[in-house]
Image (tube, rainbow, N blue to C red; front, top):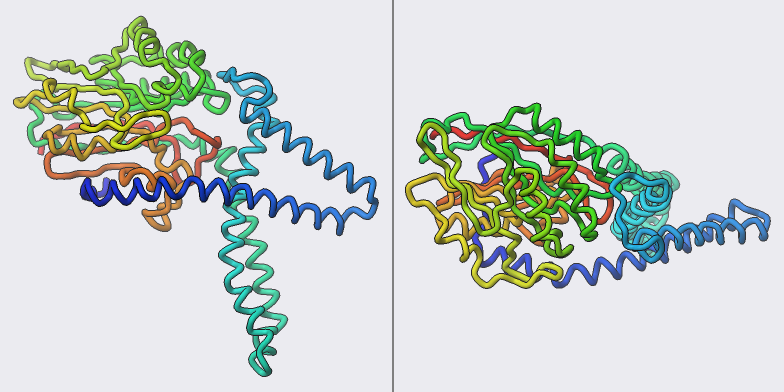
Length: 423
């Protein structure tokens, strides 16, 4: 568990907000250009490999028809907006290949753009007079660049296949020990299990969620917390996700909070009621006392809050304003907040420990190369793991589901079991 000091509120938030506004239109434009590029490459390849003009036309039409059909199904243009909660043949044959192709081809295109720089330098050098031109134009150099291009271009497609078929299912159970100076003696060694970002759907089916619930129970936690995004966009999936999680058991109960997708799907009230019926309590600007041997922890939960507009969610001018009356000055306060961006305010309020999700750990991250290489860093400095500031600590769980594309690279799904300890 690394000892991380979170950056300050003002400058970091302004930087991330500016990057977010600028980056998404650019990404969409690059995605469109990349698909045009690969289409042209495909046509050239077909001309070289398929001699028959009629057969070549048939193959190109078949590829285009499949791409169009898969895109229409993936975006809900055909098949309706209903989200299956088990992997269907259509999702396996259409959605999965399209998600793999779009994500992999985009990354490969960006890498090709980077490789175009030395190639451009080489092309310019060829126009120079000998001997520099002959030296740059050597066969060994050309062969090296060709092999490098082939390897670099192919790597994203291999990595995408890994993330789709294995990475998104490679569950990691983490066990950080959290030291809290004010922790009562009876809670020394108290274990809290966290599951987050379920995102029930064809690539996180109900059967898989039940398996993860069984794993959580086998870890024998004292308390289980769920930190939001149970559904994605389809409100009808709330029944299946509550049923799949209904087997969770812990001596001190199961509590949770709601995420941005729960709000976007319009299920905040209804899913909280469904959880109540199975004996779980969703905390919505509420606090509950967790009691052991006459001592207490103060567990607080809030709905999704963001300091800036996040999709349909309006920005919150004063974060965590609604929980100030819920704080217990004489007890340890633990906050369940889906969005880790509430941490700065939570630490300022003196909340001892915040538990969050939301980021999926970047979902496709290369943080083993550099801590900055994660898509989620475009919107938050708190991507995954443990952070601390004067006044409080934060742990960001990577969640078990996926969003956008069912691929995880460098950010495996996570179930966290915290062991609380006295400093």
